[in-house]
Length: 298
Image (cartoon, rainbow, N blue to C red; front, side):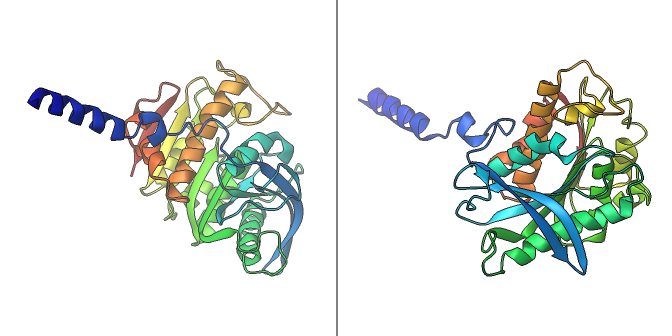
């Protein structure tokens, strides 16, 4: 009888324990929300910025109602001379995991102003925060105004660092192949209080890790991460190649999955308070990821 009781207790304990898959979702796969987008003019602080907003919706499409609840906001900056449409899969991916993503369409020419681009990113975030209390706005009562993030690729990644250094309300930063900017993103990183993550490609020939992301990572006080995709390349962070592009030893599809997984888990941890994301940010799964080399100080 005693042996039977112990066996039954063991079975009960096993059944009650949460599964590993339940504790750690695959953030590289799309989330559960349908995604819609809306083209807007973000107005804040006397500035006016054209942008597209990707958001969790009741139904996928254009200008659909926002899903029930409040969601953290992220501003995403495009790369030099790159259309914002080349980052649609990343913006949609983040939205599917419960983020409202504002993507300014400014500074797309051959002579962009990096400092102004940083201000454009902050204008987008400030506008979204204001929309939360604006009667009649699509985003009324849908923005978590205390959970703001900034992200971007290449020039947009450097501008994201500048934006975060200028805006104390930003609570997390994650960038793809961030490029040094004018003014200096490296100098801005040294003053940055918000946790920052620098994703890189080991075979990036346009903004090589040693010349761009590593100096920012080294300058940034903790919390900080440098996550390098083995075989990753500069343009592998975009949905398709454009001018000034390179190649790597991993496919674009594989690189995007890895990049989205790392960025999404970071923002889920720091902006959404998702307990399941922590191990994929700072735990063994992050440190032993076969596709992405880990460096970081919490």
